[in-house]
Structures are given as C-alpha cells and as structure tokens.
Length: 127
Image 1 (cartoon, rainbow, N blue to C red):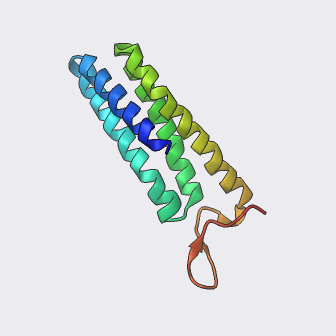
Image 2: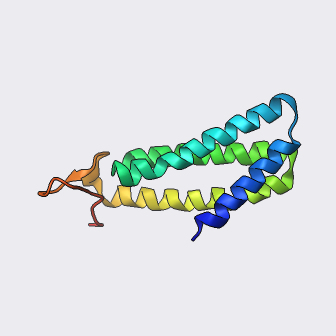
C-alpha cells in the first residue's frame, strides 16, 4: 500500500530531475537513479529471500546513502523533484530502523539465517 505512491513519486521526481539536468550532471543523475533502483530491488532478496537481516541492514544503509545522494543531486536541478523523493527516503529510513531492530533483537542470527529442525530458515522472533 505504501510502495505504490512511493514508486509514483520516485518515477515522477527522478524523471523530472533528469529532464531538467544537462550534460554530465544529467548522465550522473541517471546513473544515480539506476544504482538506487538496483539497491531498492535488492533489499527484499537479502532480507526475505536469503533471510539475512544483517546483510540486509548493510544493503539498506547503502540504499539510504544512495537516497541522500539522489535527493541532493535532484535538488541542484529541480527542488520540486527533490521534494518528491523525500517520502521515499523517509520510508527507507523507517525500514532501516525496523531492520536494525530485528538484528538487535535476534543476535543468534549473526548475519546468517537460522536453521530450524525442518531445515527451513526463519527470521526468528524477539527474545
């Protein structure tokens, strides 16, 4: 429910910023958007797919740095576009806090999925 409007804002803000950028700045902004989207797409695979909360935490920290860079670059060329990216950056900041909480509450994960008797990995529950 949250991601539909966020992806709309990401698309609109990124496209508007790229459209208003020129020369090397435009190419750099396009690359920044591409890197950001790859990081965005990668987090669920690390957290849910591989069940590696610590690895996902490192990945989402990189995503947050990418978000800050993207907002900064967009701000230089179009402040409205940059403001459209702020809810996305805020949401991933919130997701980082949740991810960190899971890591802190589950020290037994130590960067690895926990193997249960069934051989399945589980994220674990708060102690």
